[in-house]
Length: 158
Ligand code: FES
Image: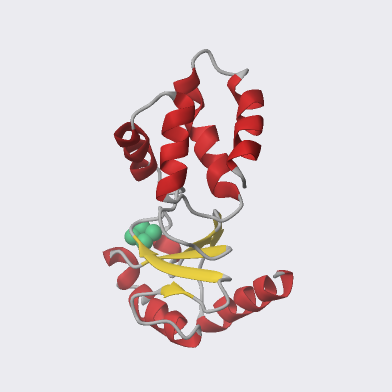
């Protein structure tokens, strides 16, 4: 998105809010929407447009896990490997998933940029592990086979 396009869209957004700063989440959403992460330039753009400091914007971005600071695949696969899930095999499930996607054991983004895989802490579905959240949709009681089917379907969607 060009900065001109951003400023044009932001004008419409600002009409909904009493003060510019109140629009910060929506402004950041717009800046992240196309490329799936926020660059340093985006942070500065938001700060300037909303008359905030860069530190204030960074604090907000850091608080919300849906804002990404690194290039992220179209599909963000977050697998809970916290202790209760690890006891149900989620840890090993995660490593096998990374291996099948050609990623290092700690996760990362596939070469085609389609999938980013990362470990997260409790997704509040401890009794349904292994559990993954993919772009906010939950997949529970996962097996390798079930996960591969989900990935194949997402690959088809592109
Ligand atoms: S510990 Fe994994 S969902 Fe709660």
